[in-house]
Image (tube, rainbow over all chains, first blue to last red; front, top):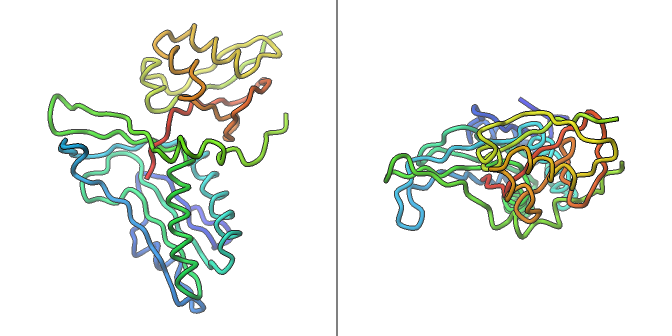
Length: 163
Length: 87
Protein backbone atom coordinates (compact mmCIF):
# COMPACT_ATOMS: atom_id res chain seq x y z
CA UNK A 1 0.00 0.00 0.00
CA UNK A 2 1.35 3.43 -0.91
CA UNK A 3 1.22 5.33 2.34
CA UNK A 4 2.67 8.82 2.70
CA UNK A 5 3.64 9.39 6.34
CA UNK A 6 0.59 7.35 7.40
CA UNK A 7 -1.58 10.33 6.51
CA UNK A 8 -2.65 9.40 3.01
CA UNK A 9 -3.59 6.02 1.58
CA UNK A 10 -3.28 6.23 -2.20
CA UNK A 11 -3.65 3.42 -4.68
CA UNK A 12 -4.43 3.07 -8.40
CA UNK A 13 -4.54 -0.65 -9.12
CA UNK A 14 -6.60 -3.64 -10.22
CA UNK A 15 -6.72 -4.60 -6.55
CA UNK A 16 -7.95 -1.82 -4.26
CA UNK A 17 -8.76 -1.80 -0.53
CA UNK A 18 -12.43 -2.10 0.46
CA UNK A 19 -14.54 0.74 1.87
CA UNK A 20 -14.11 -0.84 5.29
CA UNK A 21 -10.32 -0.90 4.95
CA UNK A 22 -10.33 2.74 3.82
CA UNK A 23 -12.53 3.72 6.79
CA UNK A 24 -10.21 1.86 9.15
CA UNK A 25 -7.20 3.66 7.68
CA UNK A 26 -8.67 7.16 8.25
CA UNK A 27 -10.20 6.42 11.64
CA UNK A 28 -8.58 8.21 14.58
CA UNK A 29 -9.53 8.70 18.25
CA UNK A 30 -9.42 12.49 17.77
CA UNK A 31 -11.89 12.42 14.90
CA UNK A 32 -15.65 12.51 15.32
CA UNK A 33 -16.34 12.26 11.60
CA UNK A 34 -15.46 10.07 8.67
CA UNK A 35 -16.96 11.03 5.35
CA UNK A 36 -16.79 8.65 2.43
CA UNK A 37 -17.69 8.54 -1.25
CA UNK A 38 -17.95 5.37 -3.33
CA UNK A 39 -18.28 5.59 -7.11
CA UNK A 40 -19.86 2.48 -8.60
CA UNK A 41 -20.64 1.26 -12.10
CA UNK A 42 -24.18 2.15 -13.15
CA UNK A 43 -26.08 -0.15 -15.51
CA UNK A 44 -27.24 2.48 -17.99
CA UNK A 45 -26.20 5.47 -20.07
CA UNK A 46 -28.67 7.31 -22.32
CA UNK A 47 -30.99 4.31 -22.69
CA UNK A 48 -28.12 1.93 -23.36
CA UNK A 49 -27.57 -1.06 -21.11
CA UNK A 50 -24.06 -0.91 -19.64
CA UNK A 51 -22.52 -4.23 -18.64
CA UNK A 52 -19.21 -2.94 -17.32
CA UNK A 53 -16.63 -0.19 -17.31
CA UNK A 54 -13.01 -0.90 -18.06
CA UNK A 55 -10.37 1.43 -16.63
CA UNK A 56 -6.83 2.19 -17.72
CA UNK A 57 -4.42 4.52 -15.93
CA UNK A 58 -1.01 6.14 -16.12
CA UNK A 59 -0.24 4.67 -12.71
CA UNK A 60 2.94 6.49 -11.53
CA UNK A 61 1.58 9.87 -12.64
CA UNK A 62 -1.93 9.17 -11.30
CA UNK A 63 -0.54 8.27 -7.87
CA UNK A 64 1.75 11.31 -7.91
CA UNK A 65 -1.16 13.62 -8.84
CA UNK A 66 -3.31 12.03 -6.11
CA UNK A 67 -0.59 12.78 -3.54
CA UNK A 68 -0.48 16.42 -4.68
CA UNK A 69 -4.26 16.52 -4.50
CA UNK A 70 -4.27 15.19 -0.92
CA UNK A 71 -1.73 17.84 0.12
CA UNK A 72 -3.88 20.53 -1.49
CA UNK A 73 -7.01 19.18 0.20
CA UNK A 74 -5.22 19.30 3.53
CA UNK A 75 -4.19 22.92 2.96
CA UNK A 76 -7.78 23.80 2.09
CA UNK A 77 -9.34 21.80 4.94
CA UNK A 78 -6.81 22.10 7.74
CA UNK A 79 -8.48 19.86 10.31
CA UNK A 80 -8.42 16.77 8.06
CA UNK A 81 -6.57 14.00 9.85
CA UNK A 82 -6.25 11.33 7.17
CA UNK A 83 -7.35 10.64 3.60
CA UNK A 84 -7.79 7.39 1.70
CA UNK A 85 -8.24 7.72 -2.07
CA UNK A 86 -8.14 4.63 -4.26
CA UNK A 87 -9.15 3.92 -7.86
CA UNK A 88 -9.66 0.61 -9.63
CA UNK A 89 -8.02 -0.37 -12.93
CA UNK A 90 -9.29 -3.02 -15.33
CA UNK A 91 -12.84 -4.29 -15.57
CA UNK A 92 -15.42 -2.96 -13.13
CA UNK A 93 -18.84 -4.66 -13.45
CA UNK A 94 -22.18 -3.07 -12.54
CA UNK A 95 -22.48 -2.32 -8.79
CA UNK A 96 -18.73 -2.74 -8.18
CA UNK A 97 -16.73 0.16 -6.70
CA UNK A 98 -14.44 2.04 -9.08
CA UNK A 99 -13.34 4.77 -6.68
CA UNK A 100 -13.37 5.05 -2.88
CA UNK A 101 -12.56 8.26 -1.00
CA UNK A 102 -12.58 8.62 2.80
CA UNK A 103 -11.54 11.58 4.96
CA UNK A 104 -11.55 12.00 8.73
CA UNK A 105 -11.76 15.18 10.81
CA UNK A 106 -12.72 16.18 14.36
CA UNK A 107 -16.05 17.63 13.13
CA UNK A 108 -18.23 16.65 10.19
CA UNK A 109 -18.16 19.63 7.84
CA UNK A 110 -14.50 19.58 6.87
CA UNK A 111 -14.58 15.84 6.16
CA UNK A 112 -17.70 16.16 4.00
CA UNK A 113 -16.44 19.16 2.03
CA UNK A 114 -13.02 17.57 1.63
CA UNK A 115 -14.46 14.41 0.05
CA UNK A 116 -16.54 16.47 -2.39
CA UNK A 117 -13.45 18.50 -3.34
CA UNK A 118 -11.40 15.32 -3.84
CA UNK A 119 -13.83 13.56 -6.18
CA UNK A 120 -14.37 16.73 -8.26
CA UNK A 121 -10.62 17.26 -8.63
CA UNK A 122 -9.97 13.57 -9.32
CA UNK A 123 -12.33 13.78 -12.26
CA UNK A 124 -10.61 16.94 -13.50
CA UNK A 125 -6.98 15.88 -13.43
CA UNK A 126 -6.04 12.32 -12.52
CA UNK A 127 -4.86 10.46 -15.67
CA UNK A 128 -7.32 7.55 -15.67
CA UNK A 129 -9.64 6.56 -18.53
CA UNK A 130 -12.79 4.50 -18.68
CA UNK A 131 -14.35 2.62 -21.51
CA UNK A 132 -18.07 2.00 -21.24
CA UNK A 133 -19.05 -1.42 -22.58
CA UNK A 134 -22.67 -1.94 -23.70
CA UNK A 135 -24.81 -5.04 -23.87
CA UNK A 136 -26.12 -4.37 -27.38
CA UNK A 137 -24.09 -4.91 -30.51
CA UNK A 138 -20.86 -6.81 -30.80
CA UNK A 139 -19.13 -5.56 -27.69
CA UNK A 140 -19.82 -1.93 -28.59
CA UNK A 141 -17.88 0.43 -26.33
CA UNK A 142 -16.94 4.09 -25.98
CA UNK A 143 -14.10 6.00 -24.27
CA UNK A 144 -15.73 8.48 -21.91
CA UNK A 145 -14.68 12.10 -21.26
CA UNK A 146 -15.22 13.91 -17.96
CA UNK A 147 -16.74 17.39 -18.25
CA UNK A 148 -14.52 18.27 -15.27
CA UNK A 149 -11.44 17.59 -17.43
CA UNK A 150 -12.46 20.20 -19.98
CA UNK A 151 -13.50 22.68 -17.28
CA UNK A 152 -10.34 22.07 -15.26
CA UNK A 153 -7.75 22.79 -17.92
CA UNK A 154 -6.28 25.78 -16.04
CA UNK A 155 -6.17 24.00 -12.69
CA UNK A 156 -4.05 21.10 -13.90
CA UNK A 157 -0.90 23.11 -14.39
CA UNK A 158 -0.25 24.43 -10.90
CA UNK A 159 3.48 24.92 -11.24
CA UNK A 160 5.26 25.70 -14.46
CA UNK A 161 7.90 23.09 -15.29
CA UNK A 162 11.36 24.67 -15.16
CA UNK A 163 13.48 23.47 -18.07
CA UNK B 1 22.77 15.62 -32.95
CA UNK B 2 19.52 13.97 -32.09
CA UNK B 3 17.70 13.12 -28.90
CA UNK B 4 15.67 10.09 -27.97
CA UNK B 5 12.40 10.41 -26.03
CA UNK B 6 10.20 7.71 -24.57
CA UNK B 7 6.53 7.93 -25.56
CA UNK B 8 3.58 6.52 -23.61
CA UNK B 9 0.13 6.27 -25.20
CA UNK B 10 -3.14 5.77 -23.36
CA UNK B 11 -6.78 4.97 -24.12
CA UNK B 12 -8.02 6.47 -27.41
CA UNK B 13 -4.52 7.70 -28.33
CA UNK B 14 -3.10 4.20 -27.89
CA UNK B 15 -5.81 2.73 -30.09
CA UNK B 16 -5.47 5.42 -32.76
CA UNK B 17 -1.77 4.60 -33.07
CA UNK B 18 -2.55 0.92 -33.71
CA UNK B 19 -2.65 -0.23 -30.11
CA UNK B 20 0.89 0.88 -29.29
CA UNK B 21 1.23 1.71 -25.61
CA UNK B 22 4.95 2.50 -25.53
CA UNK B 23 7.57 3.49 -28.08
CA UNK B 24 10.54 5.79 -28.45
CA UNK B 25 11.32 8.32 -31.14
CA UNK B 26 14.33 10.30 -32.25
CA UNK B 27 14.04 14.05 -32.64
CA UNK B 28 16.50 16.74 -33.66
CA UNK B 29 18.18 18.48 -30.78
CA UNK B 30 16.16 21.55 -29.82
CA UNK B 31 12.90 19.86 -30.78
CA UNK B 32 9.87 21.14 -28.89
CA UNK B 33 6.59 19.54 -27.90
CA UNK B 34 5.12 21.06 -31.09
CA UNK B 35 7.80 19.27 -33.16
CA UNK B 36 7.00 16.11 -31.25
CA UNK B 37 3.30 16.37 -32.15
CA UNK B 38 4.17 16.77 -35.87
CA UNK B 39 6.60 13.85 -35.87
CA UNK B 40 4.07 11.59 -34.13
CA UNK B 41 1.38 12.61 -36.65
CA UNK B 42 3.67 11.63 -39.54
CA UNK B 43 4.74 8.37 -37.96
CA UNK B 44 1.20 7.31 -36.97
CA UNK B 45 -1.31 8.60 -39.54
CA UNK B 46 -4.24 7.18 -37.53
CA UNK B 47 -3.19 9.37 -34.62
CA UNK B 48 -2.57 12.56 -36.59
CA UNK B 49 -5.88 14.38 -36.07
CA UNK B 50 -5.81 13.66 -32.33
CA UNK B 51 -2.13 14.40 -31.69
CA UNK B 52 -2.26 17.70 -33.60
CA UNK B 53 -5.34 18.89 -31.69
CA UNK B 54 -4.06 20.63 -28.56
CA UNK B 55 -7.56 20.99 -27.14
CA UNK B 56 -8.22 17.25 -27.29
CA UNK B 57 -4.82 15.86 -26.48
CA UNK B 58 -2.74 17.08 -23.56
CA UNK B 59 0.88 16.07 -23.03
CA UNK B 60 2.59 15.09 -19.81
CA UNK B 61 6.35 15.51 -19.62
CA UNK B 62 8.08 13.31 -17.04
CA UNK B 63 4.76 12.80 -15.23
CA UNK B 64 3.73 16.48 -15.14
CA UNK B 65 1.06 18.11 -17.29
CA UNK B 66 2.33 20.72 -19.73
CA UNK B 67 0.15 23.14 -21.66
CA UNK B 68 2.69 25.37 -23.41
CA UNK B 69 5.48 24.56 -25.83
CA UNK B 70 8.57 23.12 -24.14
CA UNK B 71 12.02 22.14 -25.48
CA UNK B 72 12.60 18.41 -25.07
CA UNK B 73 15.71 16.76 -23.69
CA UNK B 74 17.30 13.40 -24.33
CA UNK B 75 15.72 10.76 -22.08
CA UNK B 76 12.46 12.64 -21.48
CA UNK B 77 9.26 10.66 -21.16
CA UNK B 78 6.23 12.13 -22.92
CA UNK B 79 2.75 10.75 -22.33
CA UNK B 80 -0.16 11.36 -24.68
CA UNK B 81 -3.15 12.20 -22.51
CA UNK B 82 -6.53 12.17 -24.26
CA UNK B 83 -9.49 13.57 -22.25
CA UNK B 84 -9.59 11.67 -18.96
CA UNK B 85 -12.58 9.85 -17.50
CA UNK B 86 -11.68 8.53 -14.07
CA UNK B 87 -14.17 8.27 -11.26
